[in-house]
Amino acid sequence: MKRLLAVIPLGLALIIASCNQAPPPGNPKILEQMSAVWDEALNTKDLDTLTMLYASNARIMPPNGEVLRGAEGVRETFGAMMDAGVTGKTSIVEISMSGGLAHKIGTYEIMDGDTVVDTGKFIETWQTGDDGKWRITNDIWNSDNPPAPPRGPMHGMHHQQGKKGMGHPHVMILHEVEDAGRWLAAWRGENSRHDMFRANGAAHVHTFQSGDNPNLTGLVIAVTDMEALQKMLSSDEGRAAAAEDGVIADSMTVLSEAK
Picture 1 (cartoon, rainbow, N blue to C red):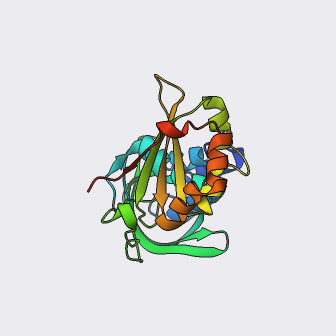
Picture 2 (picture 1 turned 120 degrees about the horizontal axis):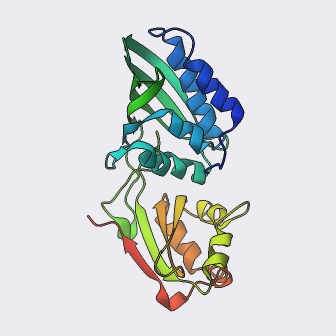
Picture 3 (picture 1 turned 180 degrees about the vertical axis):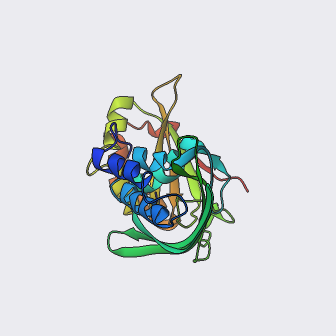
């Protein structure tokens, strides 16, 4: 659950520092405090602070997805949730500690506004590093809900959404645009294309750009309602938005996840 900020907020950074100073090692209170920092970082979209809570070699093990590693894995997984605009809350069920190793078992809720969109459970392992600070070394979770039902061309496919969230099918759209800066601007800030897609069957959308050809761009979309998404893309509203963003229609290619 866990938008990328240029500077880590001082308040949360100080909280992390204080959490790693007291209470003394072996006291579960320290992991309770760090969990509160984790929740706050997710809900304030502070990806830098959240990443600091993980070890450099941490394993991120989302449902229906491959194991990801370290800071890159944290940012890929939980950054997607922040981009999607969801918030979350974790609850601790049990903490066990022995020396510099600890295990935490808990439950979670994922919210879209005031609506709970997923619940589930997780296990984390924590270790103290050479600097004496506690960090997550393994993070695995799964949803209480069944996988989203397959729809249309996405039949038989599902994939992971993000930290402590449920799986969704993914679709990729590749296209060229008249001006990459114009296209990217449409996906940034308030009232961006993210809102439009989220209202029409997309849990979240990642934007991509070729390093060799900046005007070669694309989307990876986590789909909750394929019918609604297809309807929007083929509607007058969808075609108008693509034209406004400079998408070259005859360059578009749509790919589904391979079985």
